[in-house]
Length: 312
Ligand code: RIB
Image 1 (spheres, protein in one colour):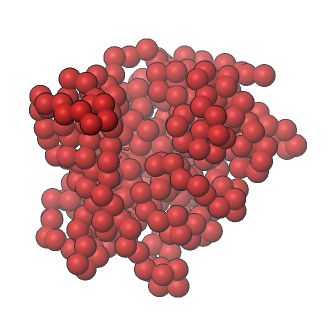
Image 2 (cartoon, protein in one colour):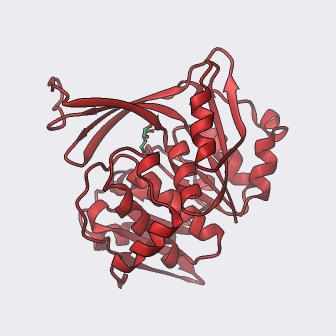
Image 3 (cartoon, helix red, strand yellow):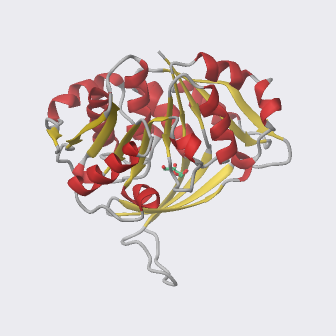
């Protein structure tokens, strides 16, 4: 059950604030910290901690930073296809966190410096991607590279974060496409405010040719839809009631755990329930990698995940 994660690595500079600043407003932080993040590295660590055999494909800066590789390796993430880009620095994310909510600005740096497709075909990444049970990507690396990976994957999961317009052909390879409410709105043109609305929008995306869609809805859980013969089936997966202290990277915990579940053969409903348990645990501790639960913790928490509800 091999998972390949293609994506970003960032140094996260995190400021805890009493409330998120309005445009033009200055807010004093009550604490700051830096930790390793980036949606790619977060999902790689989440998938590895959830029990997957994980290889990571990424581009980092050329500055000496042994702690970066050491930290990912300690979580069990394979680094054969993590390459340094001469003259570039590792990406940085500037994050403000308040009462469980966050705002993030990313300087992508090395995350956007990749070889051409023919050059990529000659790298270890091409072999790892072709051999993997599941390949996962996000959009903090160029869409062109994501598309390159999708074309070579046996099963491809795209977490379309941050939101971007995507070629139809790429969307039609996503099994599933994973989005939050904001990202879902970029594909549908309308913001869903309830699980039934998100379900309707996800179903429309599915009918337009995306094989499967999962929309994460924060405290309201997630909805999933997939094509089943000539029809589209799906459900609302509620989340357990918990107190969230830091939602940063919660979506990454969800996607990483989902990838591991699908790679080991779970069907989509079981994978979404497993991922819901993982995300609920992740938001109860600050940070990302260290906040993510391991396989045993997720399995134990599955009992707190409410049963899924069929939607018409
Ligand atoms: O999804 C959370 C991540 O988004 C952070 O770790 C930050 O690096 C940004 O990429």
